[in-house]
Image 1: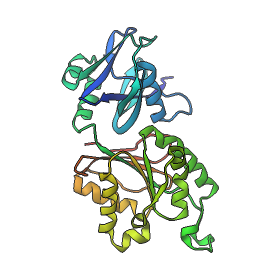
Image 2: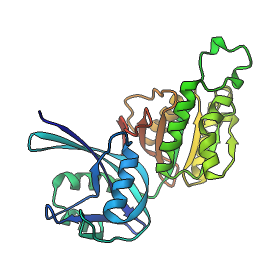
Image 3: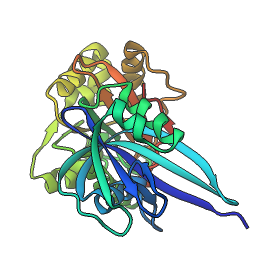
Length: 299
């Protein structure tokens, strides 16, 4: 029976505009770092592991660069690619890779062996790699509103929501968050509290990004969100289902980004990438912490 091989890889970049290509002596080819996803491993975790194993460098993930599929004999292989900013590390020849080269994009395109890799690099190069990234999270499950008699803002996470928050705690660090913001309801703060604890930062209250605060004046809610973007880095922002679809739709319309849907499940995440002028240019939706972006609208 033909098998489906699931893999993940990256365009690994560093300041100055260079990207990393690896030479695999087994195939005598030049390619992007990539490898098979291990059982139970998320795509982002697989990318970071494979990049480190093949190049020696740690990395922080950015936007999705889409999926490439091709046949290997009777089997079919898919590779999901991400942009990845290189961190600390040093290359050493290993059992899979005997040489690494840092090259400007035009030189990399000339050296790459496979046309499919060239397509990924061109997609990466279509937008600036150094951007502001926001991890916009909808709070995890909190049970049924009609079964809660106290003020709704005090409604806690359900057992299923606690598990979703735990999974987000594992997923979000792959994208290098550096601070945490949240709408005030307990279920929002509880979804991202552990991420803030791991970073050693407070959770900043964002009343204008709650349903009540946002719809009191949505323009001011969007302005507050863009001020978070303008501060740079990679903030986590946790909000509610009555806010996120409208906010993402407005940002996408202004940035001329086509979105098939802005429906946002509880415990899911939008990876939003912005230019220096706070214009949205890529929006990837992660419906669950397995790390598979089902809406890839980069560019």
